[in-house]
Image (cartoon, rainbow, N blue to C red; front, side, top):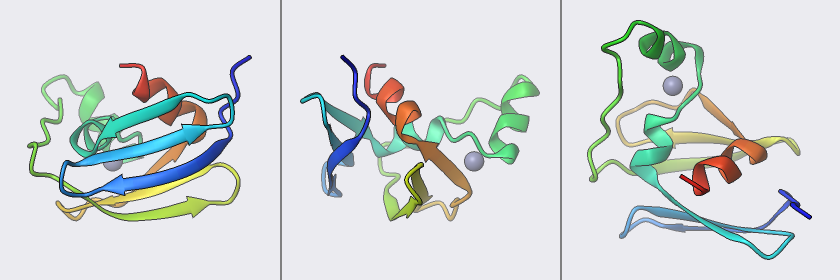
Length: 98
Ligand SMILES: [Zn+2]
């Protein structure tokens, strides 16, 4: 049974990986650049809708801020100054399976 309640979050800044462990025992390892590319804020969604707006985040891009949004998920800020994205737990879990 899938349980997307997070039990631990570890940020590996050197390797650019955010590691989340879940209540059902699974571990997701999310590249910072992948998280940035999959930001779902209004601005990024609009870029995506207009075709050529596929974000290509460099491997050097890093998470610089991780803040909980209630019980809901995380608000992530990145080294390119972008910090609008809200990442619900279920979405982070999906991204971990990419
Ligand atoms: Zn965004």
